[in-house]
Amino acid sequence: MFRSLTRVQIVVDIVIAVALSLLFLAEGVSNGATAVVLLVGFGVILAVRRFAPGPALAASWVLAVVQLIAGLGTQPSNVAILFALYSSAAYGSARLRRIGLASVVVGGIVAAIYLVGFRGEPYVPVSDGRSVGETVQQLAIILIASWGVLGLSWALGRIALANRMSVEEKHSRALAEIEQERSRHEVAVELERSRIARDMHDIVAHSLAVVIAQADGARYARTSDPDAVDRALATIASTSRDALRDVRDVLAQLRHDTDDVSDNDSRDLETLVERMRAAGLDVRFEATTDAADLGESGRLTLYRITREALTNALRHGDKRRPVSVRLDTDGSSTQLTVRNRVQSGGPAVSGGHGLVGMRERAVLSGGTFTAGPDDEEWILVARIPTAHTS
Image (cartoon, rainbow, N blue to C red; front, top):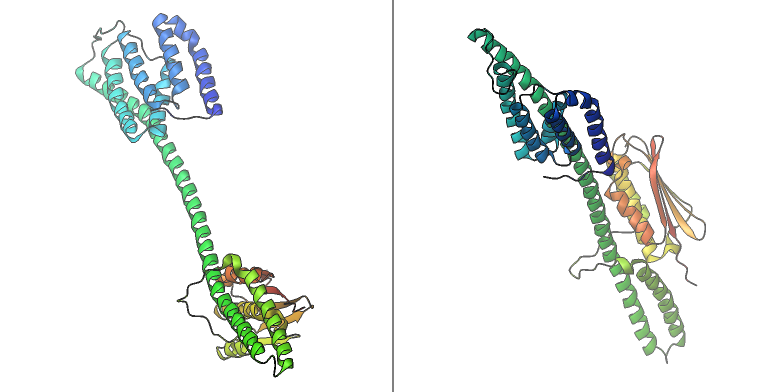
């Protein structure tokens, strides 16, 4: 029944009501005390029409009946009735909208009958020599005019409601799409983290197995081959450093399922390049360094990023143009740069879960990742820090 309005809306409605009331005050005073009371009442309706559209419409009917009983003709303040009908359609409930439409129909009939059938004193029928046909014709004209004026106010309110609902629906749809996209992004990140966790599990399990085997071998060879102990300890130290680095990188993201099967793909980039060439991709591979200094985790990250980049180039790139893959190092990190021509509007240009996964892998390894278009080329740069063994 009551709606919440902003302070600005309340002030605007009150100002409009006061302004119109003052504008019609002189004519209201000239028509007597009843007209002044009606003027005040309709002014209140103007002030509360948006805050309480239902009571405003009901009050309009009450004041209209009082006006009929008092024998007053059409008053300038009756414009408030049009505002009340508009508000019932624009801001009211479905039930109030139906009541407003019924008010248009009934109100038009009552107004037409009153204006045609009565003049002067209240409830004194007109008898001015008009024929029945003329009376009916005049009644029809006034009825159509009344329905037109009242119905137009209600229809404008209904249009305003439809426009507002359309805007709200678009806003809700936009929020839903944003939330859906956010959910898809979160799912993609979690899935990629789970895959990384399985990879890291294999690495850590391998490292611990090596440490255990070397420790047991050193214990048994301690008396017969002292040099073997030193070699075992060196192997244990190197393997433990790599394992510690791997654990530190993925500890927060670890999601492990003992039923998962590890990925045993080759991590040799030359093999990967040859495989992509066999699939029809012209790959120009150039390496000024190798990935040996990256450690097990870094080599895996580099391999997976390269594989994903070449897969995107195969799916979305221009296969008539070669793909450039280059490895460089500055001692502290190894940089992978992949360049390829892209097809306009393809997923490789607009982004996707593949880019999310590659960025996540690089970040979890302590590196950086950037990808984006440059003229007609798509350029991917991943920097993986070198694993220090000292």
